[in-house]
Length: 491
Image 1 (cartoon, rainbow, N blue to C red):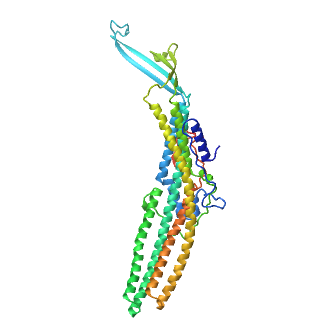
Image 2 (spheres, rainbow, N blue to C red):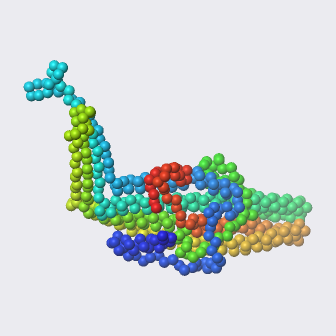
Image 3 (cartoon, rainbow, N blue to C red):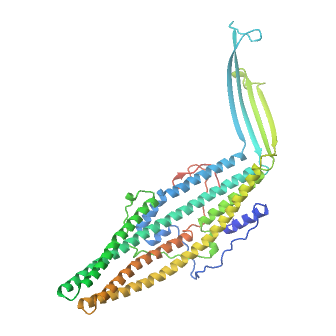
């Protein structure tokens, strides 16, 4: 069994190129290492990776989204549709059996042209006729058209399962992103509220100095401006906070009024460690790459089916019919009529329909191949971008924390000197403003770091390891709360 999607798809491409399905194309080569220069041992995301942040509210939101998110429900419904298509595609591989039964009654007028007699002396006769039969027909799949159609349906069913995993991973990542945004807005709101309180205290001190003549009206006006700016920031932050909470509603499949969790703070949450292995290993952990590979395989099978439709078809049929004028003798000797027939049909002129179907299938195969290569490149790019974002936001947060500490010391010194009357108001205002900006930027940088880590978990497949749950022949199989149809085994 081939474990690497890239290797499997490469073999598919070679086979198709050899059969004339598509021209040979240059493969997508996996890089030997990451540009970010990873030196640590690989630590892949685990299933349930969001629990590593140690946020019970986030765990609750993700659990709710996995059950009631409507995008996931749509993906599950597509699985059911694909399984139904698989059953339909497999039907031509089996004989078609039909049973029939008929009964007729006729009242015929007696006359010179009829030899029918009525024992009752009436001028008419009753005629009864009964028949029953069983027929079977089967088209030989000499060229593999029906088998190719079934294989295309199998690969399409695989695609829907990979797609559901990818949709679920996207939903969980969006829940985490939105929740961390709400926490960051709450942190910024807390900072803004604290800064407003400090600014109002400073304003009161300046007004006190104005009353004794050690400050002027300009000093008071400048501090009032700073207070007004801090007060004006608060409604905007509350607006963004409430919208982030409302956004959790659509992700969890419920109205915003049902969201009971309230944001706390990003400070104190854990940051789960994750490190990628070799770039080629990422391809086996990305459900979107697996989905693109399944689509490519499905379109390749469609090309085979469209080509086989150009060749003759052979139809076999057998039937047996019982006919009698009385039910008692319907299955008696002489009532049986049996027939066996065979037929061959070869398309001669169809206005180019079959050739058009073949070209259409090849075009879709080319599209699927390009999409597969795009998915591979996107996987490498996503990981590289997430690694870069994680590295530099970590560095930025550390530097910004130092800037906040420095601004805090400057503001404390300026406040003390202002109270002592040894510096002017402008210097104190600058120190205050620098501190407020530095604290707000730190909250935003901290959010960027959390989002970079979420993006890295998503880029590495979110703990998925390339396994799917195929539909079984047994009844009662469920996936995501929806029953799957019986009789579609993908193994």
